[in-house]
Amino acid sequence: MDFTLEVIPLPVSDIDRARDFYRDKVGFHVDIDQEVMPGMRIVQLTPPGSGCSIALGDSIWDLTKGETKPEPGSYQGLQLCVADIKAARAELVERGLEVSEPVQYAPDDGATFMYFTDPDGNGWSIQEYRRRATEPLHQLLAQLAAQRQQEK
Image 1 (tube, rainbow, N blue to C red):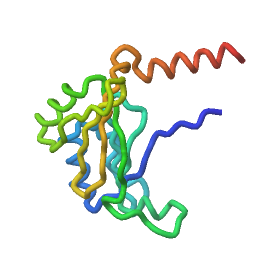
Image 2: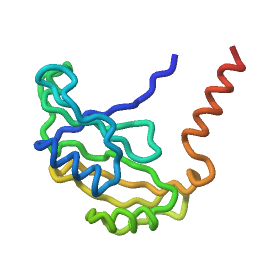
Image 3: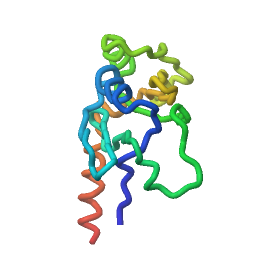
């Protein structure tokens, strides 16, 4: 059985402000923005080309087990991947996002990053993974699924 990571709840203090930030400055698509049950509004946004979304909600944490609720801004290390970090930075800056200059830690593919934070301080990195230009993740996953079907 496959277990796919498709939604990550993200702690924010103002759902509308966060929705607008991720939609307008980062370029995420708004998949859902509605009250999904009485008293529970969910905003789900997905980065272009991604199979994983973030979810913002008034009472999303009430449904999860755990003794403490994560504080807005407490998530660090969320990561996006792009095939061309310079082009991605230009697009984000054009939208008005404050994003760092790319930092190349090594010449290898996957070793160049840039960083930004959302209005609450949740920290994101963007990794350049040039291989994705010729090998999109969705294509690789489809090939893997087809191989698994043939093995059955």
